[in-house]
Length: 236
Ligand SMILES: [Zn+2]
Image 1 (cartoon, rainbow, N blue to C red):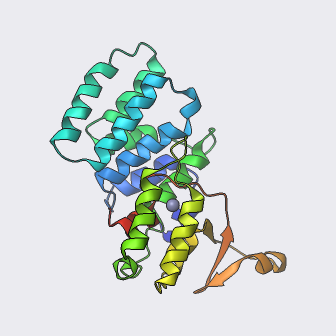
Image 2: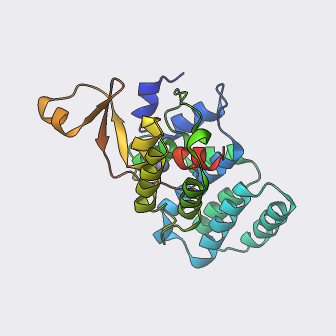
């Protein structure tokens, strides 16, 4: 079992994925696929052009559970086997695997002390949010303008496949204009994360206190599957 504070401060990605795909079983296949592809994007510089294409297809499949997605995946899976390099092959096949749970477990490397573990954990927190929160229904604040900004953020990513933080800030402003009071969501879109543990007097001046939680500015990265953006878009 894992409680909210443990989830927020965990640095072992495999423990988090195990938790998500274990007894609590809260993770959708789409989000697990996007996590797997997000892990590949975190090592983008190590991937060849061909392998990158397979990551793109893995993301496409996550959002297209239909015959088109199915055939795209099956075709890519067959041709990816021709990749000669073992590492490229492993990344491609993990992103294209039909079993989203299995591939997420494969993508999450065990332990805290390898390079990239923290980045994977932060990606999991971006995709699955604060697991134990039940926020209000965001739909009430989503009008055509909000929806257009959110769609723009989702579709037009940076070269590395990150969601543009500037667009997310604009989305936060727009939601606030519509009267959105879901602070955790607004904070997330602005790159603010919850702080756990004691807060010094100095930190208190920089942090924002809301609803008994301190929030601090972080260099958070957002990828497809980001819980806040998904919520606005009505994706799960
Ligand atoms: Zn996010």
